[in-house]
Image (cartoon, rainbow, N blue to C red):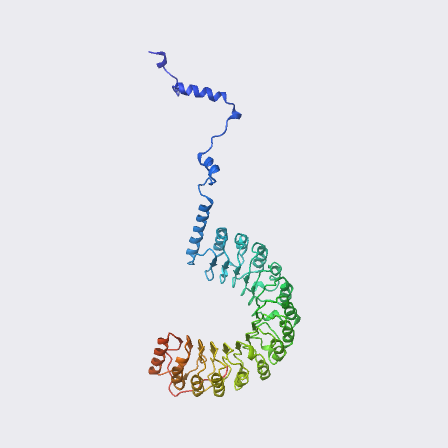
Length: 499
């Protein structure tokens, strides 16, 4: 037996000459000179810029965008890199956090709407801490989200990350008022153009705070603080005066909505003096302020100098005859007039109509004004004079006291060539036959070339009359709001009066 082939110990391995040589070479290298073996992927990553996970930055973004798509598909919403509308989605706090983590993949986002998601109240911090990823956002809507003071404070702290914000809507969040708003207002940026704070339970202190930041918002176009009756409580009437005075710092303000803000006649004069410094004002909403009754004359002399004023809303303001007389000073320059639910208009419509200039007014709302048959004849005469030739919307609903002859006279007068939307509906639980005015209306339709919607609820008709009306309107593709199943009861009757 050859010595090389002699018995070997357990575990011994016969080494080749090459192994022996390589072993000697390794021994010559000190431990300090040796480098740990590099992974092939790591070495290639350094040379090519590709991360070790094998995904390029573009690929990583694509994966993130895919996650955005999956999230939106789960909520059955459209995918848009610039506009994200997630209103009415019942978003939970967990889903809000998921959305927040996805904002980094939406760098082009400009419009974010999370309104009407009440489950996210108390959890807004999960979103606001990531808003800086979408610094180009220009519109943020958080209506009716049950925001609490902590949410509002967190939102204020995050506004530094969205310096280009132009529209902020926090309406229908009762937790905004009473101090929380004040922690946010001072952090708004000059580009802001619209501020919506409807039904936020704002207080007099909030009104003062709003006034204090107006000078920092020189580009503000719209301010809506409607449905905040405690904004001007009787205990502190000066709060609205302070806000009104501060509005002078917003020279481009074009829309001011103060519906149901507890305004009184004493404050109208101060408001009017401030509005003189708002030459761009186009729309003024003072509706649902019943304490303004009898005091409109304190405001109209100031408003008559506003050449840009187009729309004045005074519905449900308990107007008096003196108010109606004061309103005639503005009527020649207004494009839109709303005096709905003002019973004083009934029997006195001619006073307002005589002030109208031909081919000026675009919208006329006279709902529930107790209009009489004579009022409709005056309206017909105004049509014949051309005063309503530019009217696109005419609301005469809830005026059942006028006779069928009055309605027939109106439709026979012509002069409504621009009319698009007509409402002659009666009150709920009332009815009247349409026989007196149906034929004049059908005859007038060719002269109403752009009419697209007719509301005539609670008017009754025979089967033949109903067929004639529906056939004519269907041919013109006019949308009809009608009560098809209502039948005229036996014995006849009149529409009950009163509200």
